[in-house]
Amino acid sequence: MIKVLFWARGKPGQSPEEFRRYWLEVHAPLARDRMSGLRRYEVNIVTGAPQGEPLVGGVAALYFDSKDAFAQATTSPEGREVLRDLRNFVSESGAMFVEEHRVL
Image 1 (tube, one colour):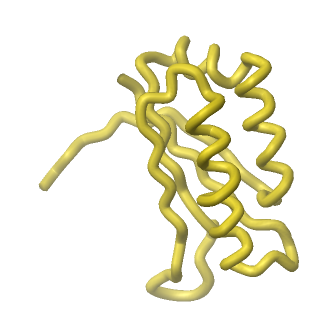
Image 2 (spheres, helix red, strand yellow; image 1 turned 180 degrees about the vertical axis):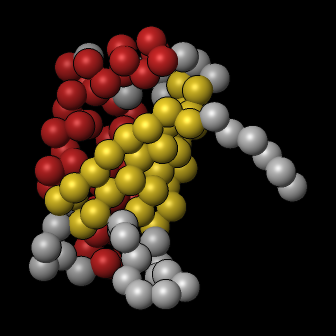
């Protein structure tokens, strides 16, 4: 199993509540239903930062069986539809493969 972390910033002029609502009520169900091979999907909406403004509006963790499964999911017509939907609520985003080490 591999884990992909995805970070996103909302569009300028978009309220944090609009960003949150769209991600949780529109985009997440679309990803859940359309991305083949997606085993687990967690959305973490940023609500603040210890100091200053948060750098991003949210971070998601997506789990797939392998990097190949991720590649297939994001290049299929359905996966491309999910990626295109990001334009509706995200100004900037990025993704990275991570290796999780549970400490506690």
